[in-house]
Image (tube, rainbow, N blue to C red; front, side, top):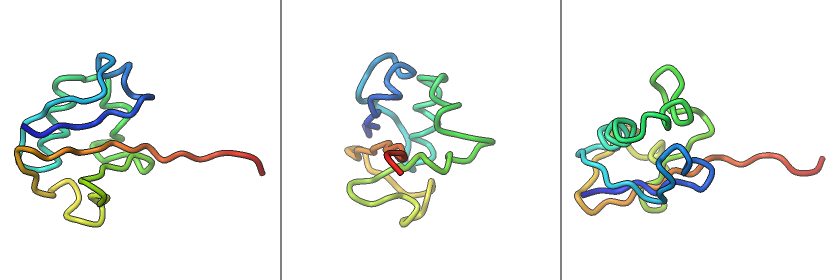
Length: 91
């Protein structure tokens, strides 16, 4: 089954786990399964049903936004990565 790597800041909302095994044939189905397993993640990943602008989902080294978005097909051994954007620093 496919899996989704959870970044450290989001792990408290995913039962403390670094990786969640999910089902589905598209990124969207995998994300829906992730939310079904860990409902607390939804508010951190989505806003009105859309991925938050600072949440990036990668399939390998490719941002899904440069593929077919949430409709990107995945295989049984796919590993997806959630990578939140990081901003800040000194001016």
